[in-house]
Length: 230
Image (cartoon, rainbow, N blue to C red; front, top):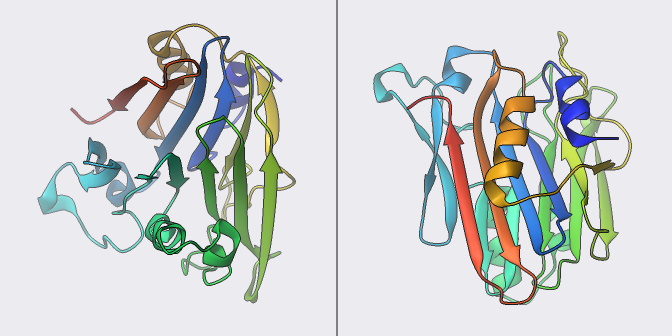
């Protein structure tokens, strides 16, 4: 699947994590979308060790509990990317020498019934190998949490894996199904990839996009942030 075509086919994939590789760089991306005023009222902002979400207009902020968090944090040579405050849980476990999996065994899907939004997470190593996870309800059963973990060696050039919270739009919104999808079309420099991803997301629902390139030879890091609210 071409990543642009894949995203264009989804009206509302929700929040998504992509990890891939160009001919020269490891690629990480995270996007958020929103249907409500509260969800749309956000921007990404750089921090010392990653990014955080922030209200664009503080006067319009209603409930910050599930929409204000740090999606990206560095822990040594490892980058943590998630769709919620489990970023901090993973970071704390890694700092004390524990694992990605054990951190997420202490968490479950978001308490936002009837959607029960999945928690999606990834850690990316300096060599390009990475892990992904999704914590989701068992077909909408709020009393059952299913925890899935996926481990990957470095992806092939111009390919990536993508995981997102929702299969598409709906009411309640159907959760992502299956393992992270393999997509192609990850090529060019960071601005080319950033523009491609941003332009492929539904224009009515997209909110913010983070893209990071890490040069596979030098380790040099380059980051782009696109916010619909400016």
